[in-house]
Length: 57
Image 1 (cartoon, one colour):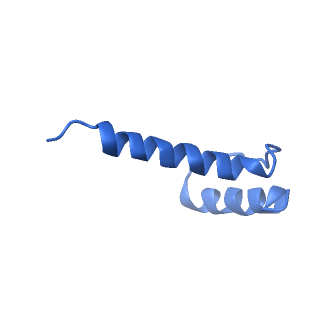
Image 2: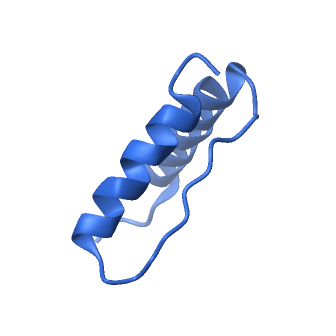
């Protein structure tokens, strides 16, 4: 995985350990290169739907 993999997971786990008394296990995933783009597109779509169809205050 070019965007971080196990090395990034280890760094994130280390930072979480410094911030929280709860132990959190972080693992690298294997979703593929398109996972970040897909997540960004879904997030953008959800934000657009909220902006367009949310009731006015």
